[in-house]
Length: 242
Image 1 (cartoon, rainbow, N blue to C red):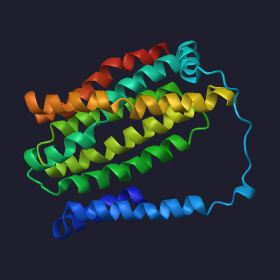
Image 2: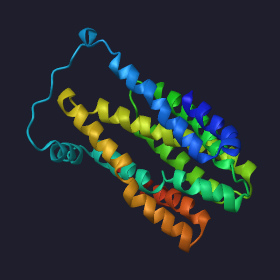
Image 3: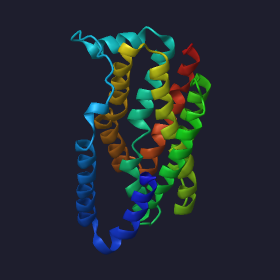
C-alpha cells in the first residue's frame, strides 16, 4: 500500500513544496523504522540454527546454482533482466518530461507500476511451487511492457502500459525468490537469496550507466526498450531449465 500512496502523495506535493522538502520528509519517515526496530521484543524471537561458516559463501552459492540446470538458467535470465530491463527509474523521469511533456508525470507512472506490482506478487503467491512456465510468462510480460512503454505515443498510453510493467517485474522477483527457496536446502537458502540480491541490486552500477548512455546518444525511447529486447533474446534459455 505504501508503494501506491507514497508516489501519489509525492505527485501532489512536489509542485507546491519542491523536491528538497520531499527528500527531507522521506528522511524523517525513517525515524518510525528505527523506532520499530528498537521496539522489537528479542525475548520472544525464535532463532534458527546458523549455517556453518566456510569462508566462501558466495562461491559455494554460485557453484550450487551452476550445478542445477533449473537454478542455473533461471539465475542467468534473472541477472540479465535485472541488469538491463529494471532501469525504468532512470528512464521514466526523462521520458515523462521530454517525450510526453508531463513534468510531474513520473510519480503518477510509479504509482501505476506499484498497483501492477501488487497483482504480480499476488499472482505468484497463488502457486505452491513456482514453475518455469510462469517464470517465463513474467519475463515476457516485463519485456513487452518495457518495449511498449519506451515507444508509447503519449502519457495516457504510457499509464496503461505501466500496469503490466509492474505486474511482470514484481512477479518476476517474487518468482525468483520462490525458486531460490524451493530448490535449496535450509543451510544454502540464505546464500542463494543473497546471490539473488546481488544480481538484482548489484547489477544497477552496470545497467544504469548503459541505459543512461543509450538515452543520451541513441534515443530516450531505446534506453527503455533495449532491455525488453534483451530479455526476449535470453528467454529461450529457460527451455533448458529442467
